[in-house]
Amino acid sequence: AQTVTQSQPEMSVQEAETVTLSCTYDTSESNYYLFWYKQPPSRQMILVIRQEAYKQQNATENRFSVNFQKAAKSFSLKISDSQLGDTAMYFCAFISYNTDKLIFGTGTRLQVFP
Amino acid sequence: EAQVTQNPRYLITVTGKKLTVTCSQNMNHEYMSWYRQDPGLGLRQIYYSMNVEVTDKGDVPEGYKVSRKEKRNFPLILESPSPNQTSLYFCASSPPDGYEQYFGPGTRLTVT
Image (tube, rainbow over all chains, first blue to last red; front, side):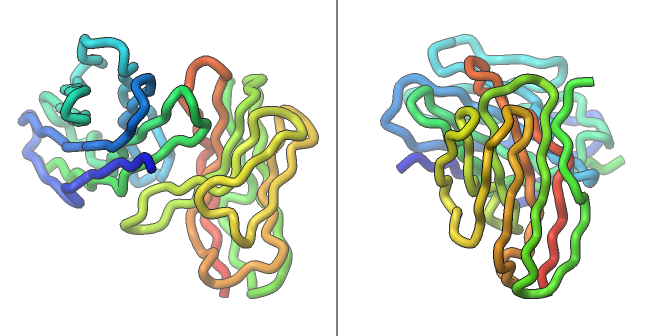
């Protein structure tokens, strides 16, 4: 069975600092996508970044970047220059080419302090 | 504006009273899905649909029904709601080749 694990239920960071959220996954598939979703207090699910497993280069979107280690099945999210608006729940998610199911981790609640 | 809409956004109901949560998308996506979000459990898939008239169970389908008669709509039906179905529900849609899912705003359901 495919699983996604986020081992940090809560994290905090000071404004302008950098924080890294961890995510590991388990799968026997070789072709898949990984995502990080942000859920602010409004509850809207917002896609932050996505990574295709066949791409070795780590995805980057402005202040957000990932460290994708395929062999280790690790997919961490780094937020640089943290802003108060980054305060949210962050979910790591996985979907393989062979299934139609997006599997989520349990989430990490990030608090950014001024 | 490309979006997924859900109605209602908030609903309080009593045990056993049938209800429907509607979901509609205007992006001509073939794939649609329903999730429930519970504290400490993340989002879990209830049902999904690859196209019109094609639906399949996700991880937690018990107590729910869906239908896909039109491409744009994918309602979630609770025939006899129970308190353990109190949750935050999300509808999502996706194009066939993108795998990225676009989420609706969520429906907060409370069953007393």
